[in-house]
Image (cartoon, rainbow, N blue to C red; front, side, top):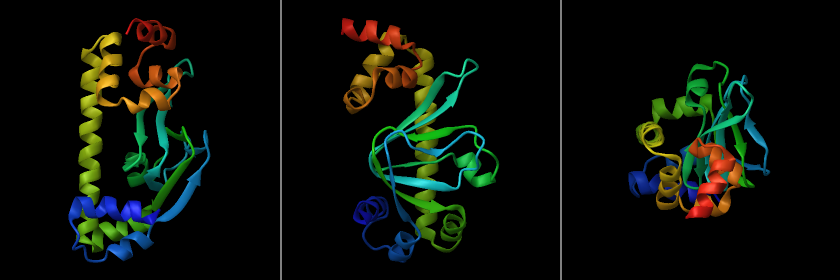
Length: 189
């Protein structure tokens, strides 16, 4: 499975990467079972995860203790609470495996050491930050400006595999609509 991470990095930086083996050694393989929490709100985020296989949910609880999904992260992507990871402060988010997952995790010490000493890894980190920011802004802008039906159509067009991988409840949470509304509107399509 380490070849998945190797390929991910070389796709971003090209084949001639110095210290690639050193970078790969800093990651430890982790398997997460379905519904297993990798991070709970209030704990400090200790890892950045690369998803080789599976799907993670990043969520918070609203005032009524309902889950509000910030993101669904699938294969060939990175997942973490970067604010908690970088600062060492308690996390405001939860990260849970939606499916059985195969992940590669790097801790804060190794991560910082690599960003300081390996220019290529620092470039990958900047790409992770930029992609995360762009995804968050795009998703917020999309959800604010679209009706519930338009959100479902958006998901069907831009992230169609989630429709078959996730429960209706989780999809509704991700789209920011009530699950009953989601079910009713989806039946109209």
